[in-house]
Image 1 (cartoon, rainbow, N blue to C red):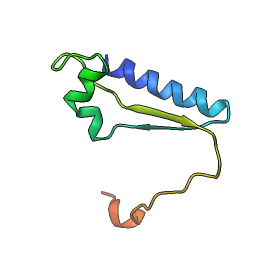
Image 2: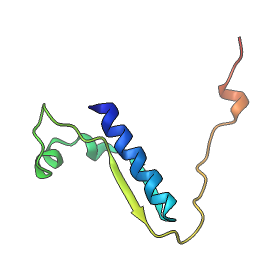
Image 3: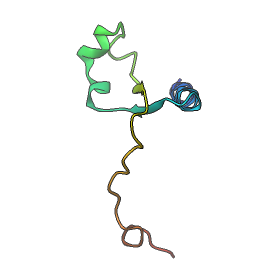
Image 4: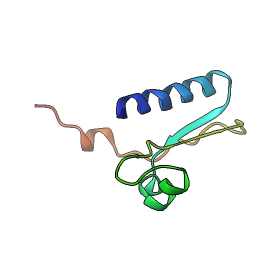
Length: 77
């Protein structure tokens, strides 16, 4: 079930972006909130939220987030 949910979310992103929309999948703290789960019709202990898909109009190129220096986090054996 988890893999199926992930496949659905990924496919939604691909579909939206192929139609020239901006799309993002986020699993933030509210995906783990039992009150929100109940409001959405889920059952605590049985159902889970895979995340939220945000789809909208592209108004500017996406900003790249700050990432650590590659050489400082990767080592070779």
